[in-house]
Length: 122
Image (cartoon, rainbow, N blue to C red; front, side, top):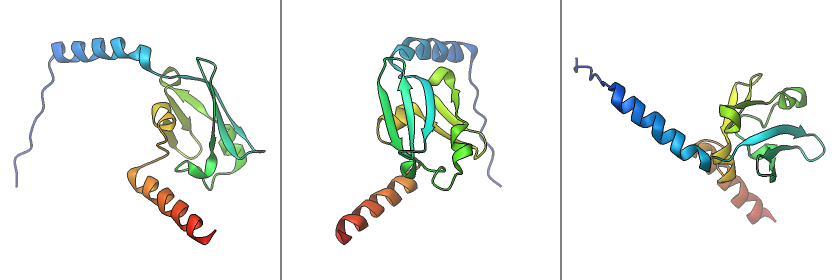
């Protein structure tokens, strides 16, 4: 049986990581309000800088088959850097959504194939 590797992190390394996170947090985009719009079937995000972003629900991994009532229950995580839907146990990072990442690599490949198929059939 292979030997299990132990990783030791020192207090100094932890302190340095915390300091680096504090230094970089000014660049985080944060959501101050998130809601579900049944009319557009989208998740609406309002960022702290006033920007409003609408993301179609069909793009978001884990939300495609959710009931509208469950979609309305969105918790903000990390002071607005993450979104969480407790009824489905689904979470998304705001930075990922802003970068056009709506799920795992496998999910993104699925979306790409879906887009290509609909383009070919049009």
